[in-house]
Length: 375
Image 1 (cartoon, rainbow, N blue to C red):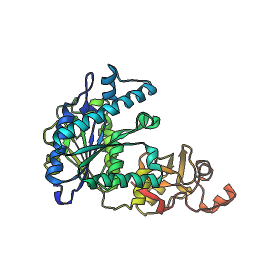
Image 2: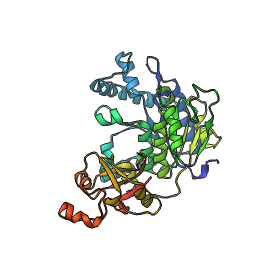
Image 3: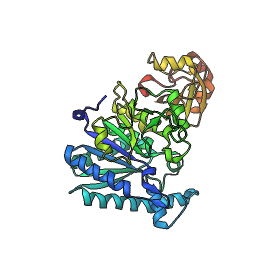
Image 4: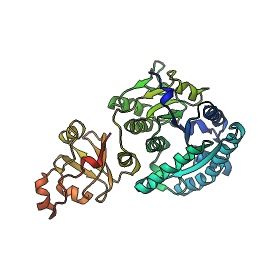
């Protein structure tokens, strides 16, 4: 299925570490070719283009003369701080050279920036204003030099998907050093088959990605499936493709069957529900039984205490949490009406018992349907 070029206006391009890093640190040759193509796309089609870029630590390693990736967190952060300035210098120089008036803009984000709805909307407004200038391509990255949790647990695939969801992008292109999702590891099996189209991300697909995520050279395919899930839920089509292939962005936009295409969901989410699903960092996990899973997914019900089997993490009323099934697969995100301690006490109980157990009952639902997004 071809992408309708008449409907594509906003595109997020994620450039992976594998494309920007050589044996001794940062390698800008692939970046130069991608920036050239971004400039051509902007001139030819006047798209709103946003880049989510890895490479800050690689740039910092080169600048500091480091031959091994830092292992200690403070040194990682310091290296990222040095590298971020160098990385943006590369981008600005390349856009000045090939952009014919195009400029880059740096936007550093951390998960906490998306937790507050006002800040979340402000970031969205800033990015749309940069698009409206018509001569600026924003370069987004996690704020690795200060965000310890993001540096340890975050990834730019997820960041790219969340940004794409936040700004209402039409297309997310994740560029790595692999052609897409294979049915098995192509490095180990010469008969590996590229999966060109995905309508739904199943446990079987996740198992394939897990098998190919052992080496960073394969790009961490499991995180790319997570990103595709996020983007799909926000009605953003995702393509995973090889950034070393010439003309890759043009070919992707022309629907020429490059890489793996993940089709978007049919359900449209309001901006508030996008914020619940993709803006706020999850503070914990609520595990539910199969009955509750079916009620949430198939019947559109709220989450009641009776269907809850487990609680992980510490969170307060109003925090965002993940809702997972018995097989630890995420099925929803939502804002809780009770704290983790209270949910631990009322899990498995009927709503009528809550007042007796807690001494009061403010809500029948642990998560109301209006404050929940099924993924």
